[in-house]
Amino acid sequence: MASENNTGDTAYTKFYTREEVAKHNDSKDLWFIIHNKVYNVTQFISHPGGEEVLLEQGGQDCTEAFEDIGHSSDARELMEIFKIGELVEEERTQGNSELTDVSDVDNSRTIDLYFLFCHSSYDCLINGNCATQIHKSILYCDVIIASCSGSWRSWLIPIALGVLATLVYRYFIKAH
Ligand code: HEM
Image (cartoon, rainbow, N blue to C red; front, side):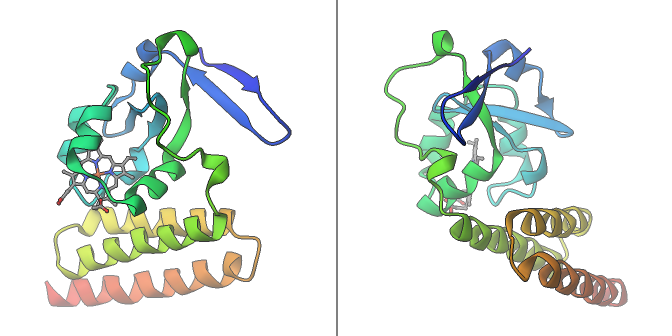
């Protein structure tokens, strides 16, 4: 069971053991560790590097693999969206402070990154390769954008995405 800790007014962190993370290792429930932080990437299966690479890392510490790829700063900000907690103190490795804490991420920037994520899924549909993932992605974007935003975006964007999804879906069905 994860332990919880209040470290400030708004900071709220869950702590997990490596053993707990290891249980979440398939496409329906996919977690991993990067720089002592725990990520749930189940909803990020349409990752730009492909589904397979993420599945291979399921339940493990993939810090080295993640760094070997040379992920961009956009990717590093985007990953904060999927952070669910950290490793318990006694199981951490040393020298891992380079990733931003989720509380430091600018919320409007995070929303922009969600758009980037949604748009890449849209391209994916247009290319005809990911018909099943696109629906998940668009729905997910709707939920996330609505929950991240306290402004007009919270109702206008989900409606716009819904209309867009329907149009793209019809186009896709006609084209095939
Ligand atoms: C939450 C964690 C992760 C996020 C948010 C993420 C995000 C991204 C993004 C945005 C890209 C596009 C290129 C870039 O902007 O750097 C990318 C590419 C890629 N990622 Fe990830 N990634 C994550 C974890 C991983 C892991 C654990 C692996 C496994 C080794 C991996 C392997 C790759 C590969 C192979 C590419 C393609 C690189 C290329 O084509 O040059 N990613 N990732």
